[in-house]
Length: 130
Image (cartoon, rainbow, N blue to C red; front, top):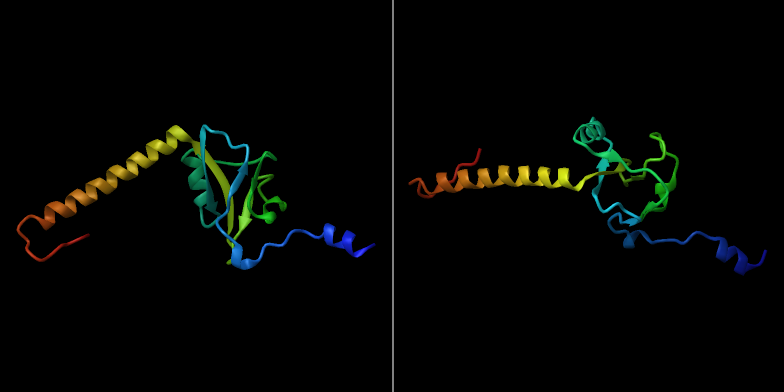
């Protein structure tokens, strides 16, 4: 083999200083929202009961060459972080995602409203958050 053949057979290297967030590339279904979920405790199961599903198939890739490694859960897309935590790519229907976001926003608005009421209720100089 020549030096040129050896150089062309080498896998492209990405320096550690240039690692960024995981990018999802490929043909994503526009009816779904995608996210990575850490496989700690019962998080995967909790997300599945909330309507999320593991992303499988060859039409989606992730900006990490380790995503094509064999998976314990079939062909689910996964990445492994520096601390050894495995994260799986999951997706949920956009309408369910929007409902979840609206519920979270309503809860935050209620908390903010309660803080403002308590802060303006004559309690000069004190704000109590519980």
